[in-house]
Length: 444
Image 1 (tube, helix red, strand yellow):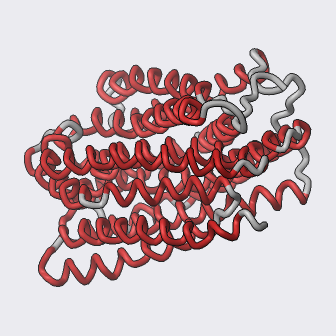
Image 2 (spheres, helix red, strand yellow):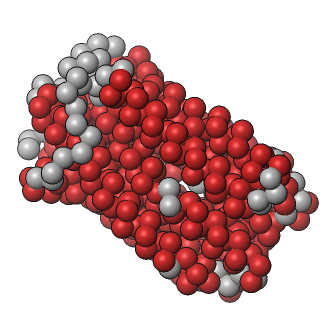
């Protein structure tokens, strides 16, 4: 076994930060792909931003589905490492990569084939719809790279090697930042240029992961990427990863419907505020997700080793860190939302609309961080269904609540309040649920 970190011994806080900081960096880098595209496309006008924003919800759905292999790897590989079973860890790693590739090929083909009817759901102008369809079909061709990168990231996180995904993703971002202005403005390709830049950057990321594993041998000497699937391994990965993929996919579908509601009340400016504002909001989400993933990996190894006291200490440390950052984001969004949003889309009316979204959503930041922190505990113990139930239930509530508040006179602001209220409820329920479950975990 090469450079696999044992998290069942040693200083807890240092191990958490060594895991979490690169994971947060990787999450911010992934977010920066979309922000970079938005920032450069924003120079073309709010119509172009609305076009890639519409596709952004579908690419978000794609990232959500890819979480089946990512979380499947983080839990199964980490459990195997914690149990000191190297052969099983390698087999689970290979299965996650194979499953990710197969699913990506089917999913990418579906989105490519049904691009027109999917974009038509937004009821956008014909010119904006045409840009969105072209953008979607280009990025769909690169979805296998997205899925493989996600699985590679999960495997490295499970092995305590979170710095490698950070460095690899960072390299892809640098390439994307170079290609975006060149393709979008230099070559005059517009929104299609942003798609081509993303496609090439994702390919580069996968090639760098292959180099790390095969040439530098950062994991195991005799590791095979793809294998013939075995029922027991496949079933276990799907059982753990599918609820996570479903909850995030359902979240993306709900956001798609929320996008249509926002478009109904606020036109393309309302849709733009939701999609671009969601990218800004991801600052808080990605920070808490970094700590949550680190907590999940740490919990998985120590749960397999029956080290309860280390898990409880790690949870308290994680909650303190995410709470501090949640408070910072609340203050930033509530008091300076318009200024923050104007960095992405400088048009005055767009910045005002996006600022209102961030201000209202800012009130839920602390609770969103609480929910995602609790997810790390659930996932690390192999309980991936409770977070799915919580997320699906309260995200579903957003649709009728948004329609009710919008019709009651709040207009598009009612959509923003529906998002904020449901996020607050998710955080509270997740905390209570795990506390109820906790006593049974150590008897199993």
